[in-house]
Image (cartoon, rainbow, N blue to C red):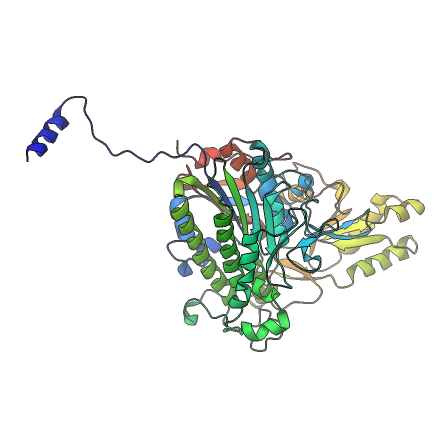
Length: 548
């Protein structure tokens, strides 16, 4: 009682105050976690919200900062270009990643975005390990972090897809790891190291890929609650190789013999396996435990595989996102327990969206269709030969672009503009074509969105000579595909993606102002007080995000 009276007197004395001290937010985050969800449309944040828990996407929306109108500002919207744009802060016109594959004039063949025949795989077998970032022509924000700290900051990229791990990690990372279809293990290449770290070997020895394929894929929630789209077993989906029922439950143990470990990619458990490995990487590499900011770049690839196969209205996609939501919750919980929210900066986005299945749209009497590209290169070359003389006028056709044969054009004393115009005339007659343009005719700042997107996607050294756009809702295929989806256009369903920031100094809120995917890297650079990536063209968004 005596002490209570003394305390009361002290409180009444002038100049003496008592208050709770708020934890001090550190000057810089201990760890940056960049999350890319492969093929996540913006509307998935809300379209499947009834399947989400409180700890995943809802937590990010409820505590983080959302940019509601984030778009890709170039064409084509594919995985390789998307991951490159997020981390380089610029478009394919500068970073050189114009697609997942493109024609290389010097080599006279198609090249894959991360292929590198000068390196060897480490931990796997076959060509799946011969990968590196050498085709990426600019630095990334992860490179700039390494340079700013004299490579004391650790940077690790992880994804089932090699391009989803390699391109975000940049040229100078501590490590990059991806999934090997042959062994079901995590691998890397001699670009990064000559031997797998012991912790990676130990992780692989657990053969968790076998565990995830040992049980049927059943829905996380009761099957009758999936009312958001197509019915179970709908025709507008593609079955797994060797599958007869084409509906839930999917017999993964029975399908493994026909599909191998690649099957894991095409299930939501590929995302679970990715997060298992990412958490192990944080622990083993002690990310965020040193004096410098570290960076984990993780990409969840299975959403793309499931989306391509089953389409955006399928129960499979709905269930994959319900399960991914739980993985996001697991990741946030881990970060809370091992770092604390104020010590970690997280951003979540996607590398592209996806279109509705054309067959389903046709049934609903809505726009959409398949552009039949079967034998297109040969047919076009025959038409050009008839018009200009026999020869191989077209070197290649990929990604709705056409590469002309400069040597033949010169030998026949023709102009490239003349041949390009002839290609355009032939293609404009085909069903599903919106327009065809010679690349030489493209220009910047035309106040015509699709034109500017095309321009931003063209790299003068690598791109083709003629570029084509299809009508909204259309995609190319060799046959009128009944099911599944794809992406690659400049239309809203492919360009509009989530962008949520969370954690260190990030206030809760949202904005409907238009921002571009290229803004992410320069914003991270600004928040970390490091240089922007070497070819960056994005705008800093920090003033939206920060609590002052």
